[in-house]
Structures are given as structure tokens and as C-alpha cells.
Image 1: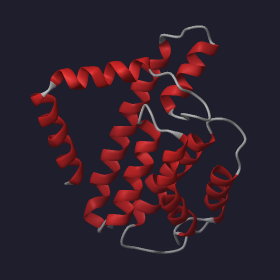
Image 2: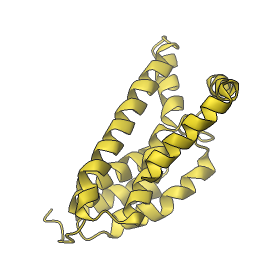
Image 3: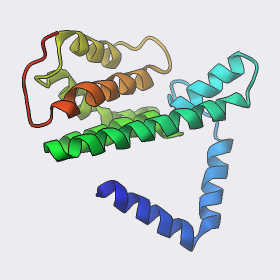
Length: 174
């Protein structure tokens, strides 16, 4: 329901002032902060595209990635809402999804992932291998896109471990 409210609010905003949305997207296209300052998937795909010599490919890769991320998030939430999905898990999952697909997510914005990281690390259905992945992704800074990697690890754990277990808190076997 909160996602639906967000979509309706965005649609109303766009209807009232489409030029504002056009300006917003034009500004996003012109922004090109990358690496430690803006460790997002858009910046990563732009770096990859520049590295292989096809700069125009970056935005296309990002749009495909974002579409897959949104589809995965919506599908996972719809599949798990009948199991008694807690508000905290819903909110933490949405924070993590946003960190993966927003085109601009400054380095300080990753503070939103502190609580989802802690939940992923301490959840009883998460096994030791996944706990080590969370620990390594969150605590070891090895390259500029490390926060994006941390978001991807946490998102994966929520998608395949925490949300499917909503309602049953049995320890993991691995």
C-alpha cells in the first residue's frame, strides 16, 4: 500500500507539472558523479561502458538493471505479504532496493542500510556463510563501489532468506 501511495503521488505531481519532472530527469542525465562520492549502479554501469569504449551503453545497462530490480522487489513483496511481512522488513527491503536502483545515492545516504545490515546479520534464518558475506560487504572497503556491493548482498539475503521466512523463524541449516 505505501508503494501504491508513492506511485499515485508521483503521478499527480507529474500531471500537475510535467516540466518539473522533465527538468529532474535532465538534471539526472547531466550529473556524472561516480565512485566514492556516488557509488550507484548508474555510475558503475557508466564506468563499465566507458571502460569498454561504448559510453552510450551505460544508461541502457542501468535502465535494464533498474527494471529488473523493481520487478524483483515488487514480486518478492507480493509473494511474501500474505505471510505476515513485518513493517520493519518491508521498510528495510525497500531501503535496500532503493540503494541499488536510484541513479543518485550519495555516499552518506548509505547510512539507511545500517539497520537492514544489522537485521540481515542477526536474523535467525541467515546462515554463517551469509553472515560473513554481510560482514565483509559492510565492513571491508576495498573499492569505490563497495557500498553498492553491500546493498546487493543485503538485498539478496532479504530476497532469498529473510522475506520468504516471514512468520517462521527457524535457524538456517547452512
